[in-house]
Amino acid sequence: MSRKIIVAGNWKMNKNAAEGRALVEALKNGIAGLEAAEIVVCPPFTTIGSVVEAAEGSPIGVGAQNIHWEANGAFTGEISADMLKTSGVQYVIIGHSERRQYFGETDETVNKRLVAALAAGFTPIVCVGELLEEREGGKTEAVLAQQIRVGFAGISAEDAAKIVVAYEPVWAIGTGKTATPDMAQQAHAFIRGELRALFGNVADDMRIQYGGSMKASNARELVAQPDIDGGLIGGAALKADDFIALIREALAL
Ligand code: 13P
Image (cartoon, rainbow, N blue to C red):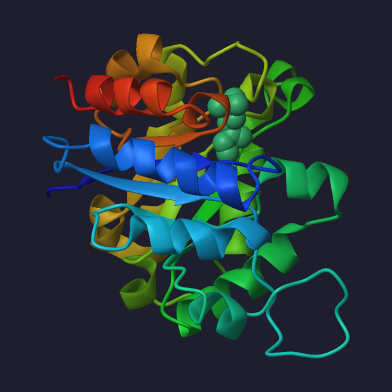
């Protein structure tokens, strides 16, 4: 079992084309010696083109923040696999809690997007995680189980091997409140158990990222946990120095 650490920056609704290009240029200069990590940036749609250009020839992968399941048609505001593919995208974030909270994303739509992303050959980054009231009500495991069982329905073990899961406790996102390494490890181990129930031993090769106020000062102890295989980073991915410092810590350098 060897799982390569994957650190992905989710830029959310930040960075226009010029700003995205500048950030990637700065990242390129800082990633020498960090090849042990798979490094990904996920800009907004209109910034993808300039970021792909800037990242060319570097090990930085580029991801999108959403994908629709239909090939084309009357779906205002959505984006298709082909549009992303021909823009040079390799990764796709699916089911981020902000999409679930503000834009009506459900486990069922997550599943449809996941099927489309796999069919198009992307590496999907599927987000799961509980709300504060769910954690306080002792429902964390039930919520994660539901998100995984429905979100991953009908996926083959062969395809599952390509999926990255991101555990993002919603109460830790953008709040400065990180899950403790123990708390995060417990959730990650539970998630891996659910994946094992669905996909057998393939679960041992699947990467599970932690997300939620991860930064350079806590990345090392989080990624040191046996079932934490990297991070999905919001705020600390928006400045090159912060992101590089975080990756170094995740690699325990
Ligand atoms: P923050 O790192 O800003 O808490 O965001 C985490 C996140 O939602 C990444 O997808």
